Image (cartoon, rainbow, N blue to C red; front, side):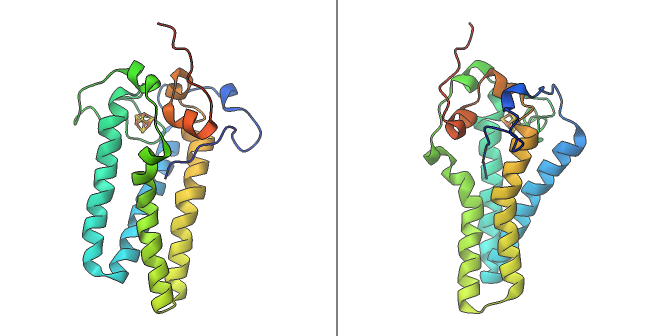
Length: 189
Ligand code: SF4
């Protein structure tokens, strides 16, 4: 669910992009729509496999959102602001503001991101089992849509919108460092 690009896909370096104090609502709406579509497709595919599987899956997706808010958004520059993914505004009612410096200082690994990827991997496995068990074009199309949105859709949302214009990326972002293999920026105290 989290893919980043070094450039905006048009060869323009992220560094050249202007940053937004508050992201334009249409951009944010598109980012939220992509996330909700991924959750909905995942829930549907797992419900077709075994109806009750949709319950723990929905709870899992809610836990992933909660986890991002609690461990990332609290320390982010966009805490209480409209960020590219829309979560910045969701954070204040749930969590006290954290420390933006610790966001820039944080180090994350691929293992830390594995729970986010599982949001797509769980239903993808479910979809493959369904196709092997009893092939259906509908399930194949839904599975392809899920994977396209999870990896392609998110890459475009982040590469062209959210990360490209993100002030926190300028200050320092562990995820961007992980994906672009860049060293930590010297934070001017
Ligand atoms: S940019 Fe990312 S970390 Fe910052 S508030 Fe938005 S979703 Fe949370």
